[in-house]
Length: 208
Ligand SMILES: Cc1cc2nc3c(=O)[nH]c(=O)nc-3n(C[C@H](O)[C@H](O)[C@H](O)COP(=O)(O)O)c2cc1C
Image (cartoon, rainbow, N blue to C red; front, side, top):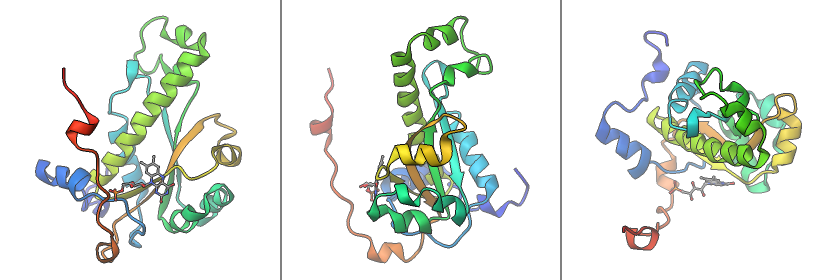
């Protein structure tokens, strides 16, 4: 990271601000400001995301950043109509993916002896592990992006086969969801509707 990098100005600096930014004030945006998301910020984002826990340190999450209009255009036909305008207008459109062959990296990830062969022999187990942990890493991505001062609009309204055919054939990754990524726009506050209610503790949890 370069000294004096202004892309870091928006980062959350203390614990109370983090809770506010990530959960209490953090909302899903419809629009973004025109502020560019620097490549250095995307690297910083991934360098945080990769530290979140995954089972056996399997680290199956993969991320593709569409940073140009041309790149975003390649998946326009795959987007649900309601998502097209928002996705196209976002400074970055990220694909949250996972690698079904994640176990081939175990030697780099300190995997236990025999773990690679165990996953390689069981497609059901490896697919479940890739999806579970890739989804978790997608969640870390959303929270880390908010910590870095960004606004995130996750989207599952798209055709995953079309996206994979357009962009992921060479790498063989599966796409899970998309994230429109940028900085908050000040005008959004005025137009934002109240946050939809959530289930309370008694409805969503129990303790034994
Ligand atoms: C996995 C996922 C998929 C979503 N898909 C879409 C989508 O396709 N289009 C959309 O406009 N919003 C989508 N959303 C946004 C949610 O509707 C929004 O984050 C949620 O209602 C919470 O809103 P709030 O942050 O304002 O409280 C998605 C969110 C998640 C986490």
